[in-house]
Amino acid sequence: MANTDQPTTDSHVAVLAFPFGTHAAPLLSVTRRLASASPSTLFSFFNTSQSNSSLFPSDLPSNIHVHDVADGVPEGYVFSGRPQEAIELFLVAAPESFREAIASAENDAGKKVTCMLADAFFWLASDMAAEMKASWVAFWTAGPNSLSVHLYTDLIRQSVRVNDGCMEETLGFISGMEKIRVKDTPEGVVFGNLDSVFSDTLHKMGLALPRADAVFINSFEELDNTLTNNLKSEFKRYLNIGPLALLSSTSQADALVEDPHGCLAWIKKQRTGSVAYISFGTVMTPPPGELVAIAEGLESSKVPFVWSLKEKNMVQLPKGFLERTREQGMVVP
Image 1 (cartoon, rainbow, N blue to C red):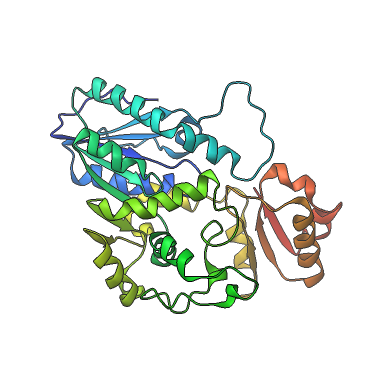
Image 2 (image 1 turned 120 degrees about the vertical axis):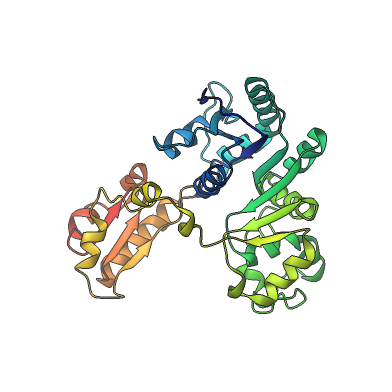
C-alpha cells in the first residue's frame, strides 16, 4: 500500500506506527500536521495492512507515503486466545519487518531516511537510527504518569517489596508521582508477568528513551508542572503537544464524530451526567464471566449506559440482555 506520487524531497522521515489500540491514529494526526508544515519532506508511514486500511482518508497529503509491514503472524497460525498474543507476534517480527520496509521505501524514494519518528514502544528505533545515522524522535500517546512509570521501572522494582501490603504504597521516591500507588501502575511493572514480550518491550523502552533526540507526548505542561520538569530533566528534549484533537484537520474531525449507531442523539436525550460509558479499548476484552457480571450489574442498576463492545463478544452477554435493556442503554461495536 504505497503512494507512488513523488514530491520533491529535501529529507526523508520514517514513521513507525504501533498497530494496536489507539496508537496509530494519533501518530498519523501528528504526521499529517508535520507533512503540511513541511511539504518538501517525505514521510514514509509504516504500519500493518490491517491497521492502515482503517486509518487513511482520501485527502492524504502527497508527501505521506503509506507502507505495509508484516504483522508477524505465521501462515496458518491458529490463535490460542492468550492475552496480547497478536501484539507479541508483531513485536518479535518488528525489527526485521521495519528494516526491510524502510530499505524498500528508501529505494523507491531514492533518498535515505534522516529521521525516525516512532511510537515510543519501539525502543528498537534507537538502534535503527544509530545504524542509519538518523535522528530518533519518540511519541508517547498517553500522559506523563504512565511514561514516568516505565522510565523508572528499575527504580520502582528495587524500591518496592512485592507482598500483600505493597499495593497501597505510593511512589513518593519519584518526583511528581507522590500520589500514585503501586496498584495504579500498569501490569508488568511490579506485578503480573514481568517476563512477557510486551513487558520486556516496555522495560527496554524506558531504558532507551533518554537516548532519543526528543520525546513528545499527548499532554500539556500545566497538567502537572512537577512531573513535567522532572521529565524535562531526564530527556534531551521533552515536548507536550496535546491535546491531539486540536491538531486534527476538518476532515479528520468530521471522521472522529461519525456516529453510525446514533449514540450522540441518544445521549442528548438523557439527563446530564447520568450515562455510564463502558469500554476496555480495542486490544483487550474481559473474559466471558466478567462480561456477564458487567451486563448483570448494568441491568440491575437501571443506569443509562453506552457500552463499546466488539460484535464477536456480544454472544457472551446474558440471553435476552440486549432486548431487555434496549430502552436503558446501547451496546455498540
